[in-house]
Length: 432
Length: 126
Image 1 (tube, rainbow over the protein chains, first blue to last red):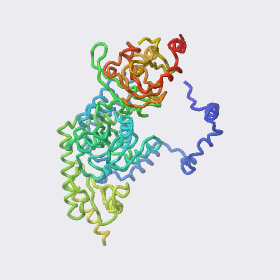
Image 2 (image 1 turned 120 degrees about the horizontal axis):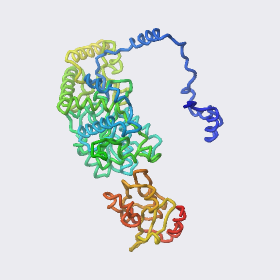
Image 3 (image 1 turned 90 degrees about the horizontal axis):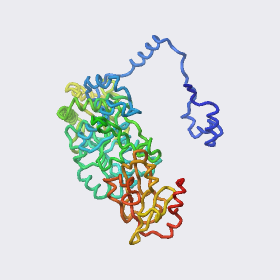
Image 4 (image 1 turned 90 degrees about the vertical axis):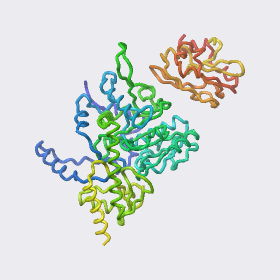
């Protein structure tokens, strides 16, 4: 097969078709500072020299700080079995397969992932996964618009500000208005998050009822690990539940790959984006798996599809499934209890010196007000081997002195004591 | 309904007058044949005011998903709830039990601009 991506002739024909005189003219809308201006690559290296060079660069990474950094992504323990099973070559694809029914094992894994998500959230159906928590929030918002025929999406202040930004970006050219607040009147949906970005817990059962009497949907972002302890989105009456699934067996990365979880009530299944695996029987009556309800999707419905999502995060969803199967309801409860208990310990320890800004109960994350700017404290703590947390002003979710501190089951008492002492010390030293 | 008494659109909907000023709308036998087995029908809301050519419903089959357009302007006075559980009616009886919705407040003269059965047959290539 010849592989010539674009010939000069192809270029001329395409430019003529869209009415641009040159490639340069076509790209002229892209601001100059964003344009590629030469790659500036150094000459090649021999393999051994390259390895030395890259190992040297990698050695400059700070890979071992003790982390109290959260904000939607958490340093949970990952059992070795997750890596061992998910690394099997049979599962080596990031996607739903292109000839899906030939890959029964992959479809079964996706089907079981969906089933696990439904049990976790007390929702009736789940899709095969989306890119990450932020894009799941966007997909839930436009799903609510499709289901209600309305165009206003109200975002409660509990929602992760980064995810709000993603929602604004992705709706920028759609007929969807993103507004603040929790008033369901005339809205397609109200989007809330529990635990809130700043760590506060809430029961949104009454808001769900208010949404339904106003003809709106309730979209709830949740932390999957927290559901070991907390009331589920389904139990609160949410219509669509979304999450960042990273906490379920996925390592922290600089932006991913992560896992967008989306579940819904069954009445909304035809408005749901993405792929859905289903169980069925073959002509001999044997159990098998298929991709179902594909008429929602882009390869059939083209520009009228529910979403341009036509894949999923198969390998990440598989890791979440393995994690949930290993933990089971009991194990997930124990992880959640450990997160909560340890966070309460650190919160009490820090509260002796710094005011805690959460008015009520929290799960594994809380806000402390420091006597110095939180950015400065985080920089000082990094020198002492700690990721201190998220300075809230950096994401527009709090004041300059507010630090969002997360604790997972992986933190030890001695780490927390050392962290508290280092934070007190850093603030004290800077006071002087 | 007898298809020879109906009017047809180029997008393969039919419309026919009933008693009480109502007009039933469905898809043609040709359309159901082209679509193959219908698996889902999304019907309009009761009371919805539709312009001529407005998207009124959606039909999904094993092969495709298509929009159904209102042949004339009117207000949705009834929808065929049977189709929720028995989408095969669209294939089995497209001009009868497989109707989609009924319109009221229709200007009867609007139907005259649509194709009659013979014109529609030749539109579909005989």
